[in-house]
Amino acid sequence: MNALERLAHARGLEIEYYDALGRHRRASDESILAVLRALGEPLRTPDDAEAALARPDGERASVYVLWDGRGDFEVAHADGKLTVEGVSDLGERWSVRADVANGRAKIEGVPFGVHDALVSGAHAWILSAPTVSYGEPGRRWGLFAPLYALHDRTTPDAGDFGTLGRALDATRSRGGDCFATLPLLPVFAERNEPSPYAPVSRLFWNELYVDPRHAPELQSSDLARRLLESPPAQGDYLDWVALATHRFAILDALAVACGGERRAKLEAWTSARPHLQGYVDKRVARMADPARAAQTVRYAQWLADEQLAALGAKGGLYVDLPLGVHHDGYDAARFSDRFAQGISTGAPPDPLFEGGQSWGFPPLHPEKDRATGWSYLRQCLEHHMQNASVLRIDHAAWLHRLYWVPNGAPATDGVYVHHTNPDELHALLSLLSHRHRCRLVGEDLGTVPDAVRSSMARHREARTWVFYFFAHDWGWEPPPEGSVATLNTHDLPTFAGWWGAKDVDDWVDLGLYDEARAADAKLERSKLTSDLKRCLAMPEDASAREVHDRITLAVAEGPGDLLLLTLEDLFSEDRPQNVPGTFDEKPNWMRRAKEGLEALEKPENDALLADIRRRRPV
Image (cartoon, rainbow, N blue to C red):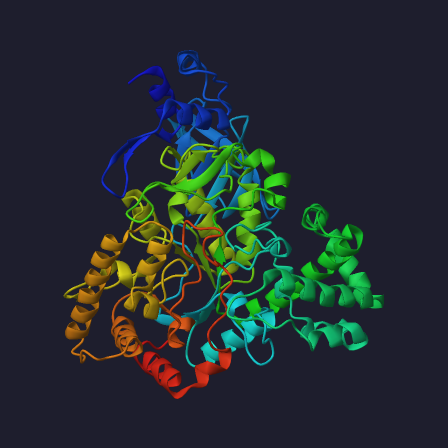
């Protein structure tokens, strides 16, 4: 092992690995150097690595994890007694005596919280959390759909928080536990950049989802009412720019009408949020009238906060925390010191994307936010958990390691960067989940390292089970206990699309499959679907919807904590919401649901959900 490799290992880099294709990969020296520089190493060439090894590993913060309020950690203190004192993130002051032996302090009785502490005269952060995250016994089920795709008689163009409330009510009235959706965070829709996984911020809500019908100002604004009655016509795919123009105009009219006591409440709410003005400035920077737009965005955020709090009070809201943020958004600018510069988050090669993936958003630096007691990440988590009954953690493997691709490098030439101590992140999740009574789900599609899955199980973070990945000619491997079971996800084809191998057609369109490979893939899919019908004792002419319902009921009877049904599978939709690894090549994050929310009332849908309710009572 040469000096550069030794330095990379010492700084938490995994520069060699086997990808999902079974091929050995080793990052180039150029990529290793770029990642080390992003971590703070002043390197020009590989020859500088030897001198870097002789230097201390930067100024790492002292962060200690205590499970259930007790534990031990290394200290620079003589054997005997040691006083440890701190103040929690909720303002609680405490002091305990610790026993020190052989350089380790044994401590107990520390209240749950993130504590700014003094240990042996030195500053430290102490994370005291329950070992097991919040949870309740039961075998639950729910529905899923992206909010922008939803529509009904009230919101015929695209969903808003009112639509979300109606979807949640419709689910729970049928015996379901929750309604799940994609991230509800702000996006640059006016620039036609609608991806919910590249939000402007993870600390604010999407203004376009505000329901103006619940704004008191609507009664005093003729303009807002007229605009509300004439939404732009939308086809199969959303025109995000037209939607943003129309909905911002309504919000602008409402903001102008906001006065008196309501204006005073808005100003008080605004003054209590120190990050709001910076977010507003970034959000409106490219708009035609930034000063006017700033007033509108502040007002919209206030309404969004109120409306999501009301939804949260109902219970059953399942929200999604995305892995990253838009490189030109508020968080990346305001917390630029917390993000690695010159780096994109991505994924190594797999059977579909043999060139790997680079997603275009910066990763969190593994030390910078840690040195603040994870203050930025804490804010992001609390922003979501304060109203959620369930929180999905996108790409759960990041709790342990993340694939970094230097800007300008091919996605095949990335490096895994490990977190200093993943227990800190699991402790933070567990602590906040109890504080907000929010269950946790980590996205694990079967490819995460065993260490990640073990930690998730230990801390009761449910993993995900997706039918497509476990289907075989003899049926399927059942979901494990402590999992969320689904037939598909927003990144995969719908059931009807998968059944008809429409995803293979997409791969051909993208140049990922030639005609011969596509023919083989379709033949294999056809054999699998035929085998599944045989295993289910269904006739060969059974429809995709009939097979979907039979599989769903069989999965409902099996293990797993939560069963999620994709609403659009009930509508026999055959087009996906997103084709991973594509940007402009496919109309991602734009497709409207084939049917309105009222289609839940169709006899075949009501019958399926009633049957699930009998097999899986909450």
